[in-house]
Image (cartoon, rainbow, N blue to C red):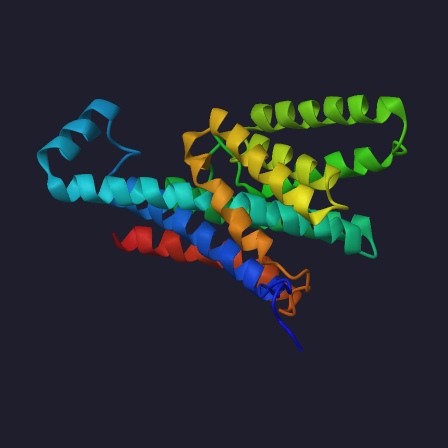
Length: 257
């Protein structure tokens, strides 16, 4: 059979998608939690003191550069988990049960996140990024309360999206506003993969207004483009516990450093 002109088969399944997501999250934990906070001491030095240290040491400059690159890579996890959330909502047999699992994960991650990122059990200046997924689920639930196709539907969903972004800002959820924006776009174009990917990549570029680290985030859509739609075959425990385990490992390493 002539293979010329046939579309290349997609090769990234659900397991690979989650693995990439966890690698990007681990990069952020390494960059912010270990290098910045524990090695460079960003949490204990003023900006001026940090600049002086970086200016007097090539080693410190190299570490700071590595930390910035790793934090930029962390933003690539946002589109991946946004996509997994959208697909999860579409495929779940029980939205309330799905919501409870994500909320439980967010609560479970909070203390490990504080320990890994700030070296404290309690830290009230920000919330871990899993809470952004919780807010997204609330948003998608509200979306479902309004039938699609009506003229007012788009306007109502824009209002709901803006409200969700404002809540994320008030609650100081890490990557919250960006996650809300990307999930809303992926949801709007969920019926057309090509449009979804282009619109999602454009949304990540808009997110650079919130953080310049999102300049790296469009790269995530190179992975999403190869996604074949196959669900993850990993156990639910592995999928849900991987992030808190990474955070606890980073917190333990921080104690050693």
